Image (cartoon, rainbow, N blue to C red; front, side, top):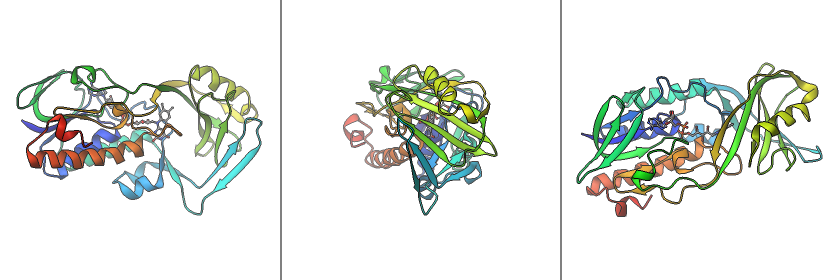
Length: 301
Ligand SMILES: Cc1cc2nc3c(=O)[nH]c(=O)nc-3n(C[C@H](O)[C@H](O)[C@H](O)COP(=O)(O)OP(=O)(O)OC[C@H]3O[C@@H](n4cnc5c(N)ncnc54)[C@H](O)[C@@H]3O)c2cc1C
């Protein structure tokens, strides 16, 4: 019997599993993919405060962000430069693998290629049915990102609203700093970005209420046209826009994007997910101490 089974080995799931194991609990981490961090659609911007607060893999950092150039809808510019590095751009493949290593170092039992198909709440435990067999656990943490197929049966809500993210990695001339473009004709509901990664490589994307691919293509052919050298495939993914109404039930909590813990102004989910994960860990710790994993006890979260 495990104390906690964490489902989903994204950054938030790995951190949650590792921290719970560090607190002396017996933890398993189940991930449906065979490898973590493969083909993740993400700009990889993480605030420097996150690196100061959490044990994040420094080797994943590609470049620092110290200044940002904002473009108004009519392309007037405003530059903000910080005395310190505000954030870092990371390689999500290296980052996610580093987070998994953190969990493994804390002696979490990691199972890859283990999609969780369903869960059954019993009297004194929860049965977690994965492809390769079942596990019994006292508590379950869902860290499944935008995978919400387990939520309904567990009585958890999903976020109400999603924005659409679309991004491509391109070769771009003369991009010296992160550029942010605002305006309903550029990215209705949010913003567009061009982020230098290394050399002339840039991540260019939009976050919109709808038609993200259409707006990204228009962004590349419009304001950026003169500077785009070589494009690559556009990839899309929804982003939760605001927290789910209910992220707790008997023996279960959701963390990270599985609970809609995303900064609505930027679409950034890693730092907020980690902050909320630490809160979940404190709540679970107290619940284990009291021997009470009921909804009433966990609802402090
Ligand atoms: C275009 C775009 C740009 C973005 N840019 C940024 C950015 O710059 N900075 C930032 O902080 N955030 C960014 N985000 C958001 C960020 O990628 C997510 O918020 C973050 O990855 C959430 O982390 P997580 O650990 O909660 O979930 P995820 O990283 O999504 O991990 C969830 C894991 O759970 C696994 N899983 C799901 N269901 C199951 C199941 N049933 N059984 C087993 N495993 C399962 C998945 O395979 C996955 O590995 C961006 C998103 C998009 C779309």
